[in-house]
Image (tube, rainbow, N blue to C red; front, side):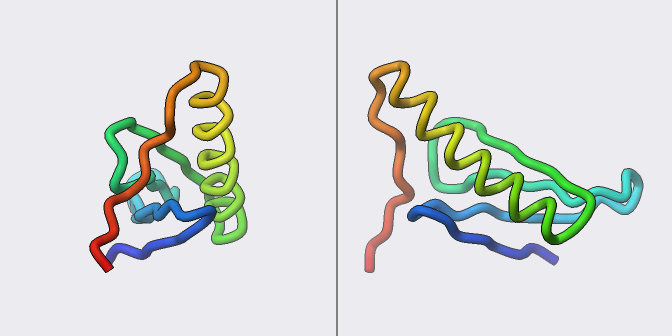
Amino acid sequence: MNNYIEYKGYRGIIDYSDQDSVLYGKIIGIDDLVTFEGTSVEEIKSAFFNAVDDYLETCKQLGKNPDKEFNQF
């Protein structure tokens, strides 16, 4: 079962690893690979928010326009 989370116009997909007992995810809809993980709902949410903020800051430092997920609606 996959779950989605949104922040600042970015969406992340979250899954659970029973083997590792960890929630993990990645930002979807962008060309860059940005991942995050946590062991609780609050941790995974915070990790996602931090991943988005870090992605935006890294793009700014590199002088790169951050990717945005295509939205046809």
